[in-house]
Image (cartoon, rainbow, N blue to C red):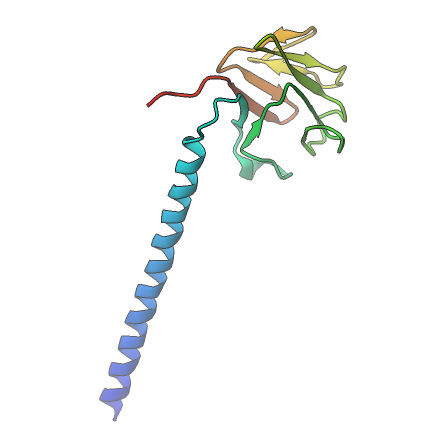
Length: 148
């Protein structure tokens, strides 16, 4: 009787281990699918990509933000990109598209807006790969899709 019971427990334990491994492999597969879906975006519209590690920030933030013709960034709810960082002003900065080019403007923020680690004082033209610093957050400006 003891041998039969130990054999049943052994097989149940093996089945649980395989079920656990299946769950881990499934999560990895779904995560890879999600990453591929993001990297294969068909649209060539410019966007901001978060450079910081999300885990180190004490507020929620997205990895990607699509840019519109006029994109406002700040802590207030009426901004297109709302970032609840205590170092970001309620109306911190604005990204404007004019004649196919994008421009970054600081809107009188207390802590300033930085482009490639330099504080901006006026409207500045953005180039693909520029880094935009706001409070504790840094974004990468991506205008052109990477060809594979």
